[in-house]
Length: 419
RNA sequence: GUGGAUGUGGCGAAGCGGUUAACGCACCGGAUUGUGGCUCCGGCACUCGAGGGUUCGAUACCCUUCAUCCACCCCA
Image (tube, rainbow, N blue to C red; front, side, top):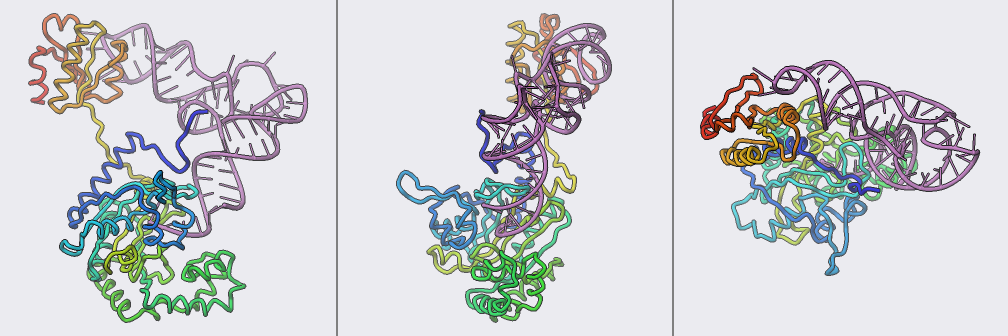
């Protein structure tokens, strides 16, 4: 049996990586325009960072982390997301000493032990941003605008922005209590998973797909009636900014983020047509996170988006990302040693001039080399023929037009550069 | 973690309890064009995801396992 890659992982082959590079380049460009700098944190961290940062009761931490003890007996986990690491780095590197807020972006692999399906993998890739050190509603709005801008420039359509406020440690517990009080008499009627959700995350019940739960949820208390003054005011201002920027959004009082650290603003961007995993971007404010992991209380807001889901969305709408794989020159030479050596030397010289050059490395026939040049879509073929070579010349063939001229070997570089 | 579907060469895809596993594309070699793209000829699965079982005999039936896809869960 041959060895295959672990479940839920992918090999990205040149055709694919070319597309990724194009998308990544766009993301980086836009981040630069918004004043974000890239941060790269370790792929693994002390497990405790995620216990505290992501939340010890979350699914991610409880059953999806790749956790192991290293040779020093430390408990280490592959990062399941990057926000906790970014915040850890903010504290550890004393970024609070810089001009606030600090605006960071990241892009890279994350790891979660999940059952793979379309749009979900065990090693997947996220791009995300964090605005750390600002409690201003404008920071939330900027994050949201940036997210939408990214998708717009990627030309991804059928987007829906879902917006909510999940309150803060001040008001959320009150709301949670109210929800539980409301659902408790109906506990027996709830679906199985909602009965489990009742204790741990009653807010989720409102998002349940089962009819009974939906129906019961209709009359359930709304979080907007329970937000404290600070949260309500913040929420209102965020909405005002979005409206001013002419951004459409849908209020979704039932939307809950799965990570414990969210406070106040929570949002999600969904795309149609890519299956069940329709959330392409999720984010919000997490004012308590940095304190949770041992820093000074610091407000922050950010989001993460799934790279794979960007490509799902692009594929679903039939877009193919342009990639450049053009070959300038294919050098064809017979097997004779002097000719082959001269060809090899010329290939090197042309590459020094920043041309892309291919040639046969083995001993394919002359004809096979022509075929290769054709299939690789070489713009020109340089042909080392014995007769021409004896005169110090090579043939330059235009593979598109079909024309061919003989040129002295000494002038071929100059000739090509003028092209 | 739960439920459902699927698994034939690089890709797409026939086949079916019986002795050589269609076909298309791709790929490799060759013929012909003065040196490619067209055409033609030839090659390319001791094997039907893997392991076991039933049978005189299985790619086809059964079991297990692995993988993929879909839904749930959860999330990006």
